[in-house]
Length: 158
Image (cartoon, rainbow, N blue to C red; front, top):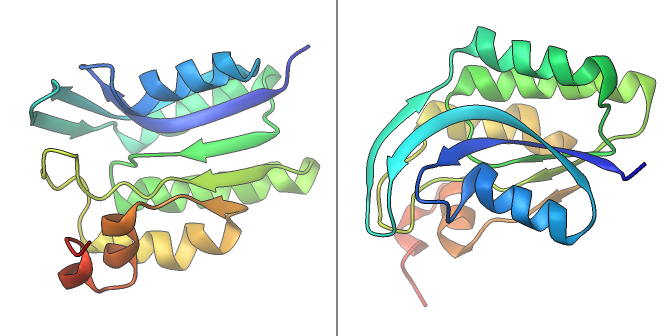
C-alpha cells in the first residue's frame, strides 16, 4: 500500500492551487492523497471572487472519516478557513501522534496570488500559537513569511 497523506486546504475552482494542486503532487510522488475541504473558493486564474470556510463540525467529520481507516504518515495544511479550524487541526494532530508518528507540513496561506486576503489576524495568531509548534516543515513564500512574522510591510520587497 502506498503511504497516505492528508491535505487540509481550500478547494480551488480554477484548479491551480489548494486541494487540486496537492492531489497532483501526491499522485506524482506515488502517495495516496486524502482531501479534507477547509474552504471553498470561487476563483479562476485572475481573481478570487468568493471564499467560504467549511463549518468546523464538517471539517471534524471529514477528519473522523479518514481517521477510521486511512491514517496518514503526513498531514499537509494549506488554506484553513478560520482560527477555529487551526485549533481543531492542532488538537486532532496531537491525537494522531499519540498513536503513531505523523509529520506536519504547513503552507501558511495568507493571500491569493491575485492579492485577495484569505486569512485574518485571529487565524495568524492561531497558526503561531497552536499549529506551527507542531510542524515538521513550514513552506511560506516571502509574503507569507513576512505576515507570520508580523512584518507585512516587507511582504512586497524583492
